[in-house]
Structure formats: C-alpha cells, structure tokens
Length: 457
Image 1 (cartoon, rainbow, N blue to C red):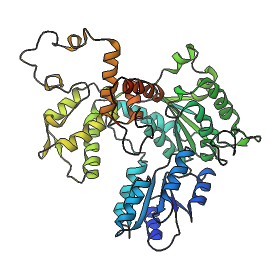
Image 2 (cartoon, rainbow, N blue to C red; image 1 turned 90 degrees about the vertical axis):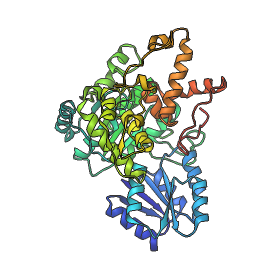
Image 3 (tube, helix red, strand yellow; image 1 turned 30 degrees about the vertical axis):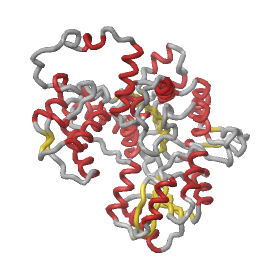
Image 4 (cartoon, rainbow, N blue to C red; image 1 turned 180 degrees about the horizontal axis):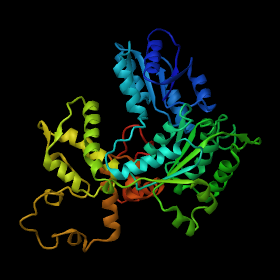
C-alpha cells in the first residue's frame, strides 16, 4: 500500500513512518497540506493519508471532497491530547493514532483502512480451476475481463492477478465506474487541466496516469456511458490519453483489467455497450463462480471471516455449531461471498456462548426461524402466509420492490454501493429510488459515518 505522510518527519511521526515501511507500506512525505494536495493531484497517489494533528485537517478533507479525491485520512498526535483527537475526528479524519505509536496499532489501521490483501481463501475445485486460469494469464500484459455475480470477489481477483504479474512492483489503481456519475468519470479516469470545468481549481492527474507502469482495474465497466466508452477504447488501443481541457496527448503504459456482473454480449446486442471495446477488453475472460457453485468454500470462508472479525472486535474466535454451519451450507447466497462475510460479522457480534449457534446466524430472506434453511417446519401457518407466494399476493410491485431495497440496505448497514451490487442495479438508480422513498416518508438507513456525503439518499 502507498502511505502519504503530511507533516515534518521528526520524532514520533518518523517512528510511525518506519513502522509502516516495516509493514510493507511505500511511504512518501510532504511538510504541509498544500504540498500534500499537489502530490495527490500530480499522480503520485496514495491509499492512505496520515496527517499531523496540528495541521489543517478540516481544510485537507474539504479540499479532497471538493476535488473528488477519494482517500481516507487518519490523524496522529501526542496520545495525551484528547481534545486534539476529538477535533481531528470532527474535522473528518477516519481514525486517530496516538503517539508514540504502537506497531500493532499502525498495522491494524493500515489493514482496516486499505484492505489490500490479494490472498484468496478457497477449497472448492471450481475455484481452484479459476485460479489456475488466472495464474496462466497473469504474467502477460493481455487485458482480462473478470465476470461474475455481485459479491463473488472480482476486485480481489484483480489484485491477485496484479500481484502475480510482472507489474506487481507498481501500483494497481481501482476505479468503480458505477459509483462515479458520468459527468465526473471522464475527469476521474483521464484527469483535467485547471479551469476545464467548474470546480477544476488545479490540474489533476487521472487514474490512467496514476497507474502508469502498473495496472488499472475498471470495476463494473458495464455501467459506463457510451460516449465515454469511445474515449476509453482509444486509450486502450493507442495507450494515449487526453486530459479534460488538455491540448497535448499523454502516453501511458498500463495493463487493463475490467469487471462486470452484467452479460456484456447481451449489452452489445442491446446497443448499450460498444462491440469493439468488448472485444478489446475480452482477450481472456476469468469467470468467478457464485458461492452456491463452490459449496466447499463456505466452511473455510466462514472460518476465515470469523478469525478476521473476532480480532477486529477484540474477542476470541468461536467455532460454529453444526446446526449453524448447516444453515450456511443450505443458504442460496444471492450476495455471494460478500453476503457470507456480513453474516459472519453479525454472528461475531450476536453470539453469546463459546460457540456460534443458529440463533446468531441471520440470513437474508430468512429472518424468521421457520424460514431458515435447516430449521424444522412450523406446525401450522395462518391462511395467506403459508409460503412466499402467499406473502406477496395482494401487494403491489412497487411495494415489494421498496421493501426489498430497504431490507437490502439495512442488511448492508447503510452502504449504498454494496446494496446496489447485491440488488444488481447501479448506484445512481439506487439513489434515485431512495429519494422517492424518502419523499414518501420511508426514511432509508443512513450510510456508514463519513462514507457518503449524500446521507439522505
């Protein structure tokens, strides 16, 4: 991971930098916020910013938000200054690291904020076949299209391929095409010159230039506007880009990885995706199987997530009771690995005894005990509610859709991007629907603190 430190490298801040380097981070440093913004605009890039608590944290966070530079910020300062810590968090810092730093705390913050592991946990032969294909093509510079349902781990596969490639020493830059509005995505990818549009307060290097020498991963490419697809095609073919408002073409040396949960061949036939771009990207296709097609992975993934979230919550890892594991093996997992991860995270929080019992396994679409896989059938059921069809008859499509969307958002703890992925819709469509529901008096769950500025929708 890439760490940018803003502040003088003296005393305890220098110690924090050395700890981060020892943990595998690539560290760069500038003295103040102005130089920090210049470094980020200039394409040096960072996955995390660590700033001295005595500097203008609020100004940095506001500038990053206004210029749409999405990088988490953590503050660091003398541990006894609790007032400074409170001010830093209120100003927008994600975390506060007290100095002198503890190595394990630095490591935990780096892991929690960036989550850059390229390790893939698996046991099922279906996943083994997929990884063998990825291993064969990773060393080349060929473009790879990674396909699969939402939640199968497409970004994790992209990081795996990059780590196995000859470009592994350079960065992999990830762009979620579904999460960025069309009118901003062009600037995000190709950069812009000062004054190119309202809000372009300085020249900014885009993701293509930031990934120069490394890998650019375009997540959910199927959401991209047709006009921008044409510019992307030229950039991939010619390895040349034009900044928005720029006059000089810029050469780039990158490898393209892309992902989608859509059937791009159908999108091409429907006229929503360029055929030439599809064939340019689809040199090799790596298809990730859904979790229901790799059942042997459920056990090992559940145990992996148990260890991860037990450590994150300061508790001991528990074993799963056979009944709890049976419930997870029988579940359909529409949200795939992401849904399983959320389920285990909840189980860590809900479990009361030394083992995780079935009462702690809350499954999407099976919240009542009689609905859960593996649970005994209810002795009786009231008329009109004996099964799924009985529960839907008499309700409008809009009513059912609203309940599905709001329940999914609650399941994702308010995270709009994750909910949109599970639902199979774009983040833009989700936000439009949430605005309608809010106007109707159905307030959606708020997003996680600090994750999205448009909290209402």
